[in-house]
Image (cartoon, rainbow, N blue to C red; front, side):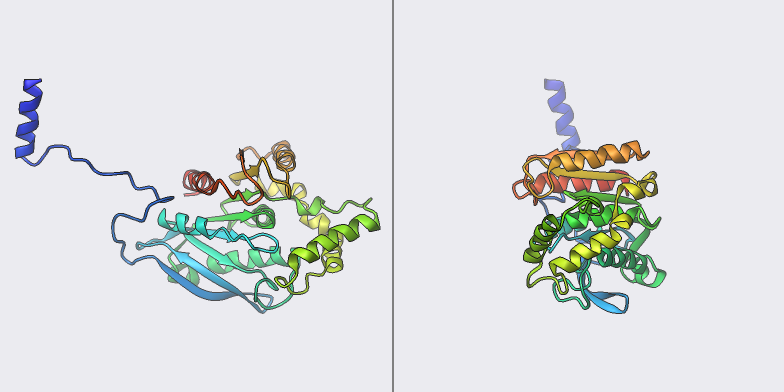
Amino acid sequence: MLKRAVITLVLSGLGLACSDPGPRFDPITMDPPVRQEPGPLLWEGSFESAGQAMNAIVYEAGGPGPHPTALLLHGFPGNERNLDLAQALRRAGWNVVFFHYRGAWGSEGSFSFSGALADVLEVTRTITQTEWAQSHRVDTQKIAVVGHSMGGFLALAAASRTSEIQCAVSMAGPNLGSLISPEADPESLSLIGAQFEEWAQGRLVGASGPALILDLTQNGHDLELIRHAPGLQKTPVLLLAGESDRVVPGGTIQELYKSYRKAGNEDIKLIPLQGDHSFSGQRIELARHVLAFLDERCR
């Protein structure tokens, strides 16, 4: 004990004694401990899809970059925007791109499910163009999509269609392409359409029940996730399911997981959380799972 005390005293005199470094930086719950140059910033602007402007913001990470970049996709109609995730990812060094699809929340045009998928692909193309990527310090080799509910569906659908997306996270995302079965009777379709219209009211332009049902009826085959599963065989995928989710039950996502594995998607992970459709009581846990996956598989 005396020998150890002497060594400690000597090291202290040399300025070499171990000091308490303080708590380890946790981007989920802490601000960065060191000032970054250039600092983080918020870009406000728009993207275009089919010549129509979509309202957008980009949470740009601090530091010179280039930074890995995630598209954060909201659901239908988009009441829960998961911007707490955007802030956490930015603190961890990720850029986060958030936008409203055509016809959604003040963006130009009319909303449709198939149109929203086209919008995601167009934004992906835009942020990976050289000029835009350099201006916003985007690492075009590290692009992820993170979506909730319908946005989770869009994340998987978009990632299966373009090599510009390196990994995908779907939080409580349904397989919209399988929602309308060929045997569905008019009464069932009317009920589904009425629910769509109620959710969209005042938020999504052109999203009447009949219009959305027609979209799924005409384009359901192309929107069916399993049909495009081969496009995800080399793409890391994370599926998150809420065990108390009444909108997209966990069992539905479990079946999607099994179908992806059967189709040859081996780099896929399913994590059930004790939460509702919006993971209302698991926001920190949700952020930890998303960030851990992105840093491990996409960075």
